[in-house]
Length: 145
Image (cartoon, rainbow, N blue to C red):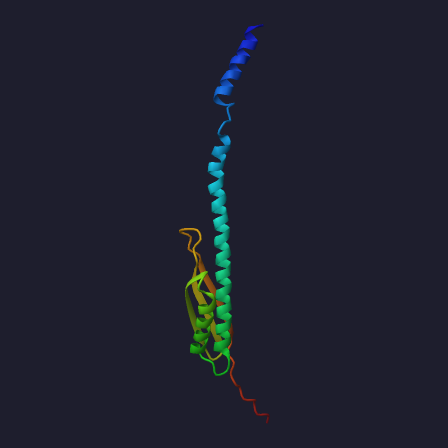
């Protein structure tokens, strides 16, 4: 009967030597968890910057459409409106903004493109906003007759 407790004692010693010692495990977990957590926070911040840049582009597109679609307005008027809004709002989160304004006889279209500022290296998120509306024009009343 004494052999059995000695074998159990030996198994316990081997277990403590190889599998039971947990010293340093917290440090190892932190080494793995902290960079993953920081990367997650940076990704959240990157998408917040992208959303803000998208809102700025949409505001510029709406303002440019208002300038281009009015009666007597032109594509150049819409382009000037877009440039004004982008100069005021787009300097931080919206990089390399470009505005394309088209005014036709029936419909005016504005498209703003660019890139969101980078928070996470090597992650380049495109920004695109579009506004479309009817072009205002004077249509004389039809003669009843």
